[in-house]
Length: 376
Image (tube, rainbow, N blue to C red):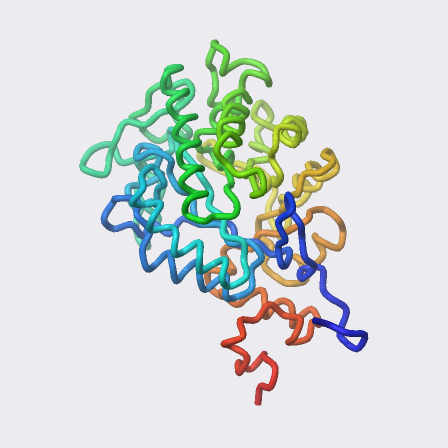
């Protein structure tokens, strides 16, 4: 608690309310794949506990577990986590409970990699993202139209309407398990060239049925996923979507369509949109540098009424993050890669921005740290 003598609270530490859920500050740990399931069973274990738990103790407001597959063939790699069975649910439960006990909102990103599945895990010294076409870690992948997401060889086929319906059920089943595991938020992964994004973008969706064609048809898959998840996800918890605001390709998905979709999703029960970009094709053709995606987040925030919007992408310094919030471009900021190196980043950022040790989101067990109260 602060008093009149306390420093002004930095914007990063202002509490945030999403669908009635109180979030202690504006800093979000985004989902980052760990590729740590050596058993290839999708079951999280001690690594995931310590990784997510440390960032919760380090002060993040929301801690989002990595892209977690809703089906075995929806994994980016065989080393990914899942929520397609109850064993995985039960393994996630103590992780979610610990994150919540440390004061953060435990969240999980639900995804399906589509044509970008069955790839080499991102480990040091290996060709990460390259498709695996044979062997025990290879499987036939799915996409809206049988169109690969990159120019690399891929064993991919077009989804039937039965495949689409089954995938919608799989997302709903995974969301139900996420609730049972104790997560306070789920985020549907509609970005970075994975399955939902493949439906949204005309670069990869050339279907001629009700799931391809104009804007209404290309967004139908995501809208059906939202409706199915809403049926099983508690009304008092947070439902989010991560989206690529632009493909950065003239004939691809763009920010105007993103804002239009955000308005629809806002009315259909989505509370939070995390705005990233790109993911289709071989090379990135968009802008670069700190905050290069912030204009996309601002467009969604200005184009909606109630949607909580978070920005992400090359925002690493406390000053960069603070400026995004002070300017009103977004309601929250995701800090990813910097958090891999420094799980206590929120505490250190708060102190660097002038907060007192009492105001910083510091775990009480760490009060003797050099940046904590009573340090000597």
